Amino acid sequence: MLELSVAAGEIDLKYLDESGFCAWSEPSYSYYFRGQQKRLEQSKPRGRRLSIIGFLQPLISFVYGLVIGGVSRKSYIQMMELEAAEAQKTGRITVVQDNRPIHRCKQVQQLWSKWEAISLYIFFLPKYCSQMNPIELEWQHLKKSELASKSFEDDLDLAYAVIDGIQTRGERGNYST
Image 1 (tube, one colour):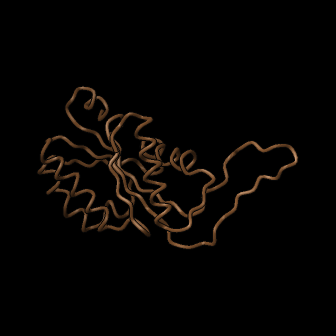
Image 2: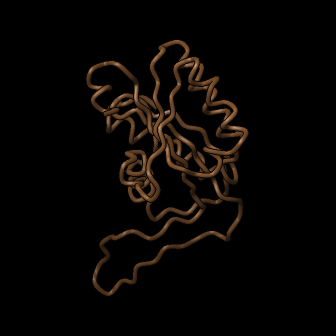
Image 3: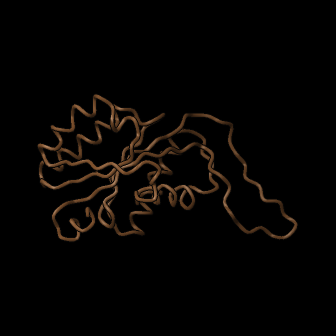
């Protein structure tokens, strides 16, 4: 129903999700000459987890924010407030997201009527249906392609690699980031 509304030009549909990255990525499949052992050198563990929260509007845009540590209620609300400001201008944004606890906490629920009043509507995916959220594929490709088999010295290097990976994916997919 929502995708039909997009096709009819009635709404702007965005998918929201969070993901995380660490300084060491898993080794990927690669070729090595016979007799050579595959080796991935890793730095000593330094830094913390890098988290990302993003809004994907397929074929149009990907807006995101990076946070050291986990995405908190405050970070989520900040990102939603930015989308609410955009919805107030266009009058037609719908966000689809999962049922993560910070998406439904009391502090956020108190903002739902405010956001709806300025044309930011939220739809929740059924539990355990991540395949219905296209942003999940963005995370997967970012981790399995752009960041595969890489290790980073610190949080800043990891953040730059994530930013570069998102830029690359945006250029390849012909959407803004």
